[in-house]
Image (cartoon, rainbow, N blue to C red; front, side, top):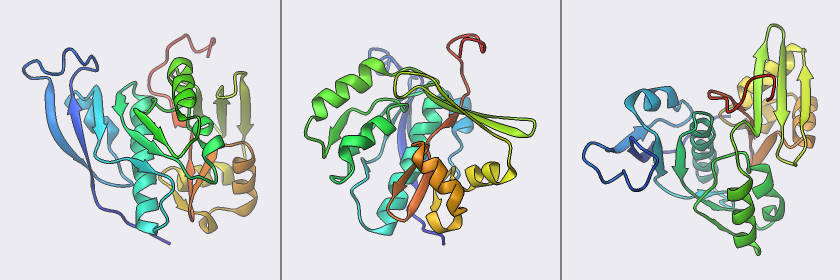
Length: 219
């Protein structure tokens, strides 16, 4: 099942420092980003080091097109985070899941605002002060995949060599209808908080790291 949403737009700058963004040549203006095939490598090559999303990521939306749009924007935040590109974005959480959702998303670049959560200010402060790159990453080796998760404070590491895991990640990467993913794999990923459900869509949370902060042995 395919659900489409309108193209996305971002405002982009060549520097993440707010004091530098008004200098001549720093603004790249508004740039289109095609849903489900966000080419963050292209944005990086253009010089994008800071971006602002066109609208909030609304995880409380009920319409399928709105859910698709939320997942598309989460993909963009995730992939920009992997490049160490800072992002201005706003997050509206689902009232049914809000107490848990922000922690699941805490490997992403912190948003400007969170709504739909009673202790939003406390959650946002924790997100901003505890965020660092490589908090939830995955890599693919010869015949296996490995996921490293530090969102909960300690290191949780998962390794799988069955082809169905790699195939499922490829499906989930941009968000897929949950029925299109093998039920046993989806259940396992969901239990480990590696997949986010947005309505009928299931979305892969970890990113493939593009920039390391430490030596590989330390990570």
